[in-house]
Length: 197
Image 1 (cartoon, one colour):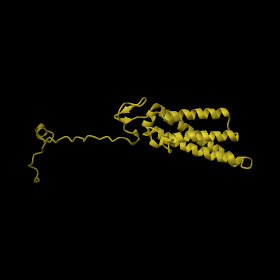
Image 2 (image 1 turned 45 degrees about the horizontal axis):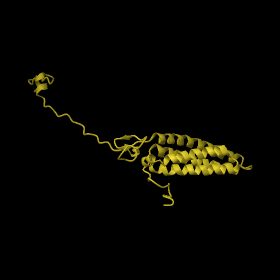
Image 3 (image 1 turned 180 degrees about the vertical axis):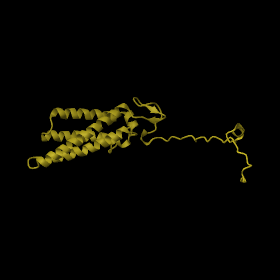
Image 4 (image 1 turned 135 degrees about the vertical axis):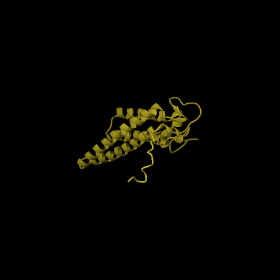
């Protein structure tokens, strides 16, 4: 005995008749993506392009010299940390015979290494605080070199080299284009502002 659906013909849904009469659904279009300015892209600048600085869509890009400073600061930070750990170890081993000074210098080098790694990050991403701390660290490095010379841990030639390098870095960071890249004030020194004005 045939069932109730025996008389219903089978429908071929793939036939041309159904394909052509099927409703055309609209194709969903993606909304345009709005790109935001990256936080690390540096300050937005206007006006003429500073020498040695690239402008991409109005954003200040990192100057080549600052990139070199970032790499050197990163390498120096790693070496300072390793040297500080070594001096800490020597200070602990030879604590009876002059080990106290080695331990103290180990702590100083360890702290400076951490600061230099932070500076490498700040230089790489053009953080405004990196300009102030870059000049300060160079000045502190000269003072430490003087103390090392007085205590007999350094030579006059290494002191002169350290002073020359620090002077070059401080001069470079105070160039108008570099100050502008870090959004630093046009005049004055870090933390103390204009002296004698």
